[in-house]
Image 1 (spheres, one colour):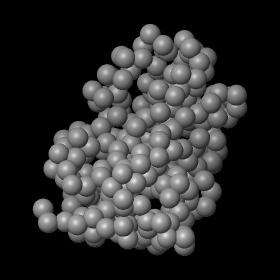
Image 2 (image 1 turned 120 degrees about the vertical axis):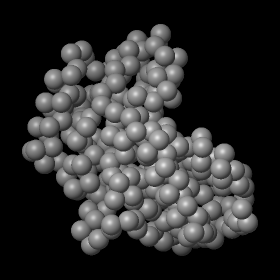
Image 3 (image 1 turned 90 degrees about the vertical axis):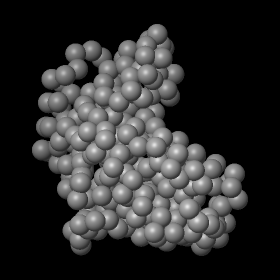
Image 4 (image 1 turned 180 degrees about the vertical axis):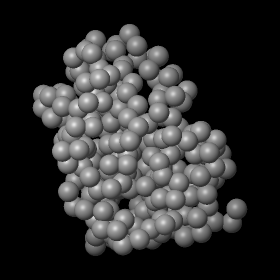
Length: 261
C-alpha cells in the first residue's frame, strides 16, 4: 500500500462509541501538540456483546475509513476491539503504528500481594484468550475476579455518569456478584473511567481504581518518537470528533464527557 506517514498528520482514535474519549483525554495531556481524529462506530455500538469475528470485521472497516483520512497512527481505544482485531490489523497494516488498549491488571496485582482484584469489562473482553492467559499467569499473585457489566456502556453513551439510576444499577450489579472484600478495581473498558467516581463510592474510597489509558498514551508517544513522527508544534493541537450516525446530540455528549473528566 502506497502510504507515507508525516509529522503533521493527525493521530486517529477509534471506539465503538464515546468511551474512547477517556483515552483521547490522556493522549492530549501527554501530546498536546498533536492533532487527533476521533471516530465512533455508533451504528454498531456496543461491541462487547458481539462475536469476536464481527468485532474484527467492524474494526477493519473503521481503520479503512481512517486511512482514507490520512492519519499517521491509529489508537484502538477499545479493549474489546483490541482483543479481537489488533493482531490482524498490525499484520495487514505493518507500515502503520497501531496501539491497542490494555487492561491495567498488572499494576493492580502489584499494588498489593495476595489481593482480590475486581476486573470490570465487557463480556467479550473477559471471554477472549488474551484475558484468560494474563489471568492465569498472575493467579499466584492475586485473586482476579472478572465481572462482565452488560448495560454499563449504554449509560455512558447517553452521557449518564452519575445519576441515581446509574448508582443503583452499579451497586446492585456489584453487590449481587461480588462476595469478597475488593482490594483494587481494574476498569477494563474505555467507557468505564467515566463512571469511576460511582464505582469508588460503591467499593470504598480507599480502594484504588486502575485503567489503562495512561499506558496507552505513553505507548503511542513512544511509537511516534521512535519513528520521528511526533508533532512538536507549540500550539495546542486540533480535535475532530466524527463517526457514523453522528449527530448534534452525540457531539454535545462528547463535549460533556471531555469537560467533566
